[in-house]
Image (tube, rainbow, N blue to C red):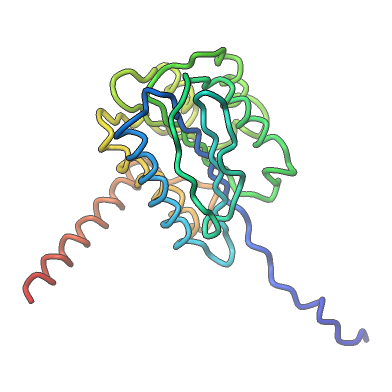
Length: 234
């Protein structure tokens, strides 16, 4: 009979749930839109951190596209993220951002095979200023990346809905329309709820329908309002 070995008593490592944000930081996002976007992402990060479990860790990565396409935040466990605010510059090289995202998802040293189904989130207020068709087609139709859940938000009336609709093709989502910057926070609340609901699901690879997420948000708002009303009695 083998003797006592402390190495035999290990705790299972948390399984990653990757979330990749593809964020438009072109000059058209200056002012209120970029401020609202920064605020919404910071709030989402805080919510992700609060929903870490021993079994699942939410990994967040951020790719920005403006004057350059940049890995603004490599995969980082959500409760360890130190957020660096986004700044605007340049045009909208969305195609290159698609290519970078594709490379991240396909590389098993970056996005490990043991990870749960990643969520990709695209936010833009404009149209691509580089070649995007081939890169987007590869992202949504080929390899591991085609299995990702994908959500998209159009900010204002100048966003290219054709591209955004192609980005979410094959999912059950619709493009979120933020007619003004104040709606950015609503979209990120939806993204937050969609991801965090998976951390308590029996199968974290399954994404809840949009209608279920919207109902959950409505219930949480109603509960908050009721609590406020009761507190005000005193």
